[in-house]
Amino acid sequence: MSLSTRIPYDQDPDFSKPLLEVPGVAQERMLACLAFLYGEAEAERCLPELDRILKVHYAHKSPELIELEESLQLGERFTEADLILITYGDAVKGDSGSTIEALHRFVQTYYDSINTIHILPFFPFSSDRGFAVVDFKAVDPKMGTWDAVREIGADYDLMFDAVFNHASSRSEMFRGFLRGDPTYDDFFIAYDSPDDLTPEQRSKIFRPRTSDILTRYETIKGPKYVWTTFSRDQIDFNFRNPRVLLALLEALLFYVRRGADIVRLDAVTYLWSEPGTESIHLPQTHAIIRLLRQVLDTVAPGVALVTETNVPHEENTSYFGDGADEAHMVYNFALPPLVLHTFYSGDTSAISRWADGLEPPSDTTHFLNVLDTHDGVGLMGVQGILTRDQIDAMTKRAGDHGAYISYKSTASGEEPYEINSTWWSAINKDGSEEEIAFQVKRYVASRSIALVLKGVPGIYTHGAVALPNDHELVEKTGVKRDVNRGMIDPELLREHLHHPGSKRALLRLEQRELSRIRTRDRAFHPRGEQRVLTPSPAVFSVLRTSPEGDRHLLAMTNVTAEVVRVDIPLESLGIRDSLWRDRITGEHWGTDGDRLPIELGPYDIMWLTPENEPRG
Image (tube, rainbow, N blue to C red; front, side, top):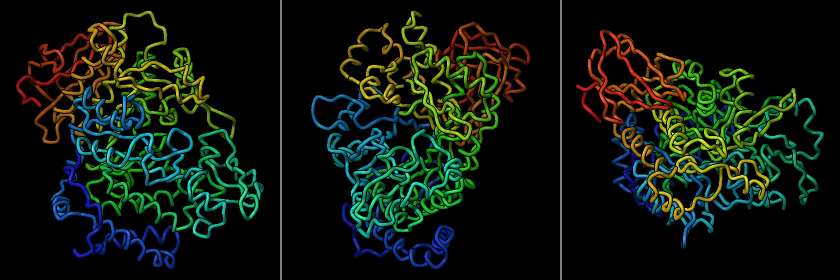
């Protein structure tokens, strides 16, 4: 839920108003971050430019926006009402006009519980489906204009991507580097010879790809070998140069003025590279995030910062910092493979143990609970949670369902890094002869886990409409991830919805009701309590409690194709009510002595609340 209530920034800065005076504590914190990165002398030289950037941003604010920000309740920045749709700006076919406009119409038509839209990079790009940005401040003309973005932002909160780890090889910055433009001379990590990065140094670098870390480019000064973490077209920025940091910080605030309520820091763990180390999770990277957070806290306190770090869970949660100085949200990357493992094995033991310790460090930090993304199902998040045998069994099962498996380089060779599949095909085997109603029931049961866990739920568009794997697109592009990036045809979807027994009609009916309840019940507030119960290995059970402690909801999901009977001790609930009501079906369940007996059919979902408690 946006704290801006959609009050826009003024298009032009008004310097006749009093200029921003950065509070002393904020200035000290920003100076400390800069000094850690560049030394005290260079930090002092950077501070005036940083101060100028903040003053310019502040001058774009209307008095109404300034007044509103002064009354923010940060504990209500995210509430039970938040449900994020993740989508490409050109994911939806449109008859005419921009694809962003078509997306706007699509969401308004089919998703009445969505309040936030994460539009994946919609800037001009040269590769990697938007993540090789050519111009950080423009909208790809094939998708639309800033006016189209503004219009969708009038109805929904918006999440933008800050792809600050690298730039496209076709960006003006890198082209300037090739031309020897002194402005960009030190903007990228470059060597005169590939041997300048020794075999020992290369072996230590953590790579999410199997390509070479250095790519040769011809420049006016001769051949240069530039650092390319992801591909030869994505050139890593050199954050040792403070001008790079200041330029991208200015871009961050530009996004805020253009309507970003949430900013996602893409691939942020790779920001700072240091030969001789793994070049991930470095202290300098955390210092940069602390600086960005302090900047937002100072001039845009309603805007949330999200880190995208597809790494083992403990390392992922380190990007919360101390709970007040780094990310407001981190992607819960352990969740998708854990849910997949749970439904493949029919055993909730692993996910229950993990979820039992799932607690952000403060009331203003939250997990972003997603199952599918534009990339697929990452596997790094469950390292140390699932065994290698369990991960191998999961990748084999997903492969049998039609998934592709991507690998990364390690010191000992290659290992699975990501399952490339739509969530529908991961849960339901391509070509399955099972009844479609049964497949939909299993699918919705799997998706319900992300709705009940503490945090903010998100859903990828292709998961929302349950698209199967698009093998034809992969054959066309040669990119495994494209299996989950096909085009959505709203006309075809509308046609399917006219047939009550179709997959899409059944799916919409069930998902719509769950989303409606989820976004209206205070028990699901991300600041509320969460207690994991273990009445049966076949049932994932979570007791959610509102922040005020006056509303409870017992969420139970049967992860198997069998009927399961469980007895819930009332003592474990801490609630003595004798009658409970299923919020989904309206069915009532009574206690038997000191227990609450429940019977769940195959892949049943029950969201039970005490009958005498207030609802909603």
